[in-house]
Amino acid sequence: MAKKSDKKVLRGRAGRMQGGRGSGRATKGAVRLWGRHAVVAAMENPERSINRIWATHEMMDELKAEGIEPAADVRVEYAQGPDLARLVSRDAPHQNIVIECDPLPELFLKDVLDGDPAAPVVMLDHVTDPHNVGAIMRSAAAFGAACIVTQDRHAPPESGVLAKSASGALETLPWVRVVNLARALDELAEAGYWRIGLDGDGEVTLGEALPTGPVALVLGAEGDGLRFNIGQHCDQIARLPIESAVESLNVSNAAAIALYAANMRAHYRPE
Image (cartoon, rainbow, N blue to C red):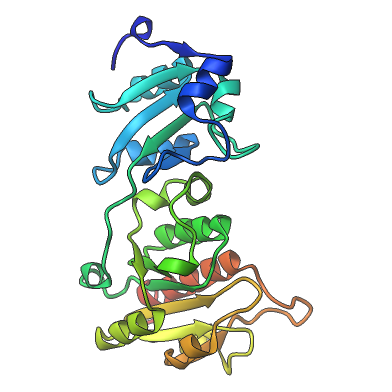
């Protein structure tokens, strides 16, 4: 990393002009991420190509003290907090560091199904809120999921909001984007996965539906739930046993509970 004196501090209009103002949008084809956990995870991910870093001197010094430094060819521009705020979504907690990077390499389902058979696959059917997808990623990483699967056209792209919600999991959890979820479910069946769709009207509870072998957990969109065609490609529709006073759970909460249950079934079965 170059010395501080070699970097120009960007303030006011100059910072806005060089960095791009606005809503967290990066230059064409790139992704803009912010927040300490998300950025450090990206910097430590060998699959992530970082093009530019905006940060305060204090933040870069803090990272350097922890042994975290950008590659020599990464452009680092020092700025103050107010100028960094103009690079991200309104009111986003940038925590004094913002990066612009290339999207992660494309993954295919077959690339991630040859690992631990006890690791569940999480499939999201038209879940579009980046906060929810990021939170689900965080839970999936915490409970050892094999990957998350979404549809190309009906899921949020990589973004600062999603990465911040995922708290680093975007860089560690494989994310497979497919054209057709039904075909992906067929591929999972061929690989030996028991496909469980989660729905409040399921005839059995998730605990009753969980198998002893590989499992895919399929969750539907906020409000609408699983689409009929996707439910038809599941082996079983199960519900979470919640109290009748509560109509439903947020999809990210439901995912966390389902992942915990799958983890317990896979690793802590009674003798």
